[in-house]
Image (cartoon, helix red, strand yellow):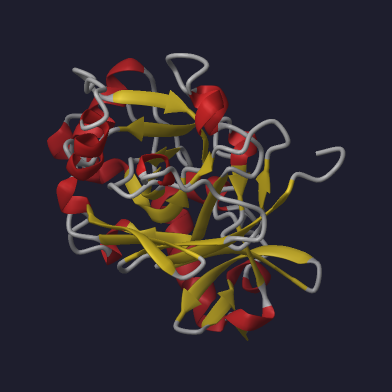
Length: 290
């Protein structure tokens, strides 16, 4: 399934994407929750209800709806640093040491942004950077999960841009401030359920800025498997339905260009992951009062 959050004619709902159309399952079955996090909490019963509702749901062209962030209010939005071999190599080339263990940080949930919504250029920095990533979405409550069993707790996958403000990222060892500016976590375009992804460790990931290819990697480069990531986190705390784990970026970020190529107002960043779709966001000046 490709499950999307969308609005149409001012009404919000959840839909099932099929080709270039979306089946409005929320309208077909008013008993269904109108947000994906709550639907995931419903487990297999909710998933069966979605399938049944899709059979009788009205269908609309994707061009006639506005896709929203699939998980608008996750309880956790976590990111992993230095998890691709190519990105680790470019970091080491600048004299930085690699962490001995998985290096997780928080992105505040207010950073969540829609797949085609604008990204704010902060008033306090020019060091705005992109990081095309695969996001894992948790499907059920889980604690002390072994890597080999982690597939059973994954609801699916999304595309993410872990937008980073580099000078603010360096303000503390956690990096949280530079990762958490509002609008700096666009995700989508929908949640592709795990059963539709034949091998999540063989997905091509590419990022373009104004049509110029900046990143071209593959999840085969990951230092840690998705299972190892979930084992690490669930050793410490309970993972919950709708939690987002954004899993690192390959080489090619603007920070390590010669000279650095920071994003500027008016530029558009497109991140595409094989089989998961793409997100595309334009940089705008941070509005007054934001």
